[in-house]
Figure 1 (cartoon, one colour):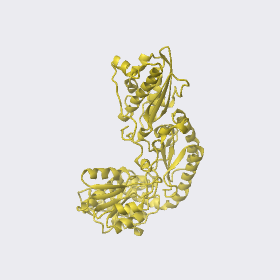
Figure 2 (cartoon, helix red, strand yellow):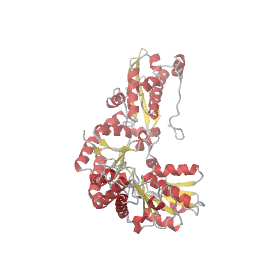
Figure 3 (tube, one colour):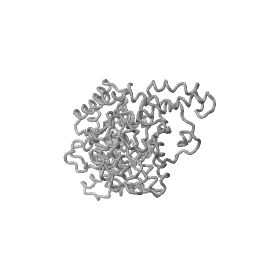
Figure 4 (cartoon, chains in turn red, purple):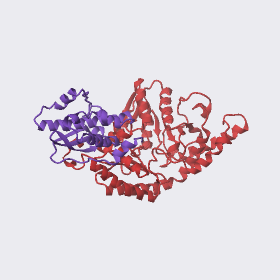
Length: 393
Length: 152
């Protein structure tokens, strides 16, 4: 059965060009970049090049890039590290729609005695910047706000947020895991102090990420060990993955125009087609302040897991904000924070495209999904008596 | 997603879907908040379940469970239907993640609600189902389902 993969915000296919770049670093050039001998030294040269490639995609200086194992580690290192750098400050400001890598960490820190302010969002998933300004106090050690939301693709004005945070004298960390590679980022043009990115969201392998730390930012290492990464992250470098991340960033930069033109056009056609052909289907999140590849749609009166199972039978891979897919009974915290009704939240499907998707695939999805939705609605107790169902608000 | 073949079959071929017009008893369980609502309707004749149908808003396990539960009670006596404890469904669902077991509890509740509605229409006491369950030695469970503040 063919696979139509539209779950690229979950993870992406490793670009074959990335894999080719990595291959020599397993069995041939396997030296430790920290070694004194030439055999290791040549690997250090390759890591240096990868660092330049990663720096370039976000307009940073290579010395500001620290390689990590994933986006979650980058987020933990930034928030935890900043709290340790400012022991007299105990407050964190974040939003209700962050990734669990940030939100669960903040909950954990709260149990340890820190205080946390989670900013709300409106029905389109946008923040009120006045609320942000009011939330930051002299005791706020770090403000952590994502660049783009993983579920809805909604983009926050993080450059403007950085201005506010710096004016108030706090450190700003931005989780840009979903943004890097999809939209242009230039750290020379903003005041963001720290920024997380992840390899497997941009066609590099899983298990590698990076943390950008602006020059002059106080930082306490999260992984304590050797002198790697200029004493900012102990542990022998995952060389092949780092090489892969470098190449993936180089490619993503080259494909940036395609992302905002061809990929966006595919997403728009998919979204418009589904909304036009399926009644009671709604877009989650702001129409335009959004990543070019993401579309979160709610199909009211049915539950997302059933949709995913039937889509999966047709070879279509996407994800849902429904409770059943999260291992709990609560639907997506992002959609709930936006005030999406429970039934809409449970019936949400996220389509996230990449440069590997084609027009034929969009046609295929547009053909397969409407009958799946009608079929499940035939089973739903709310579908036909929806007009008199008060339980549905 | 790791549903067993059996659950997938129940999900892919949902029989007993619909609502019986002029049903002898109708019952509903669950809440939209928790992401699953089951509505069962029963057609009774001479103390036997002649037909059982469902409409369910919920995940794959909830839909599969609805079909199983309505299938099991068809042809059963009222007393027999009462004994379709959630265990019968739970056994079929066996090996599913713990969070899915709540679907089997929900099916039991929907069935109980439909039978209670039937008994009420017959002029029987409202707690007749509970009485029959106790008489048959079946554990009577209540699980908080529903309003804000309650866990799912």
